[in-house]
Length: 266
Ligand code: BTN
Image 1: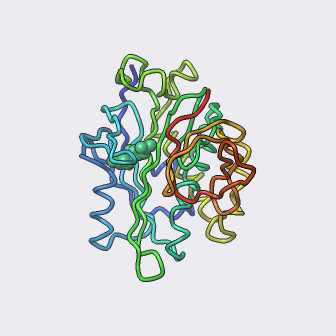
Image 2 (image 1 turned 90 degrees about the horizontal axis):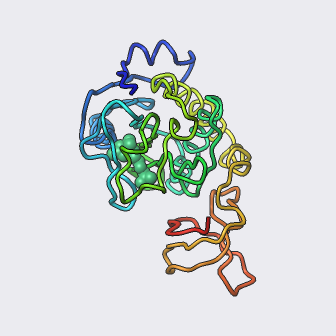
Image 3 (image 1 turned 30 degrees about the vertical axis):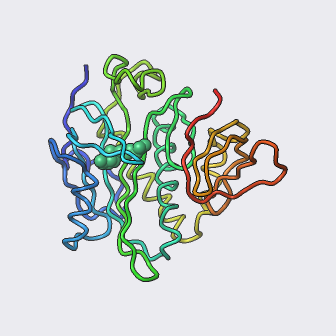
């Protein structure tokens, strides 16, 4: 079983020069890299601060769920960003991170699909998730922490029973182990490029990177959204990063800006 360490030196040596990365903190263990990054943000850490851990004891997922974070197997990373964008644009950064992650796994030989709003799927099972936490000013964003968890070398037997069959890893998908530090560098480089495109041209500039990997398009889904939950068909993601959703029995297509896919037909 591969159980390498991620060091800041190894990571920095692999990163493409000219990226936005201001400093990398690599921890052996922490409760949650998102919590560390939020703390650093509140203490004035700059845009481009990266926090990585080999293990999380309190890894946090969306909707208050836990994120399984055993040592030495996976990537747990949080990016502290201080983008000059209106508050309403900030949630799109999670989708930008998803696109960059798909770029990186594809470059490593494992093409994935993106499930709105921010999961990476391999072979119909979830391999990565993103949890973004934002602090907003009166109109513009103060900071955003984008937390990314990627199951890299996790073995089938290490997946908790309650999510077995629904979760996967790159190793399970590809049948071989990966260097976590190389994959992390690939993700940070890809994120730097996608972030540049996004800040210059908004979500439309990165939209094709999502659209060609859209996991849900044409699929029957059950959505939880502010107006309630419903079954229907996902019709794609638009250039404002909203999910296009056609509820069963309706001709209209709704634009859902925030929500969660509770279920989908395989
Ligand atoms: C999800 O529920 O799909 C989102 C999972 C996000 C997990 C990552 S791991 C790094 C960062 N630190 C955390 O505590 N959560 C995120």
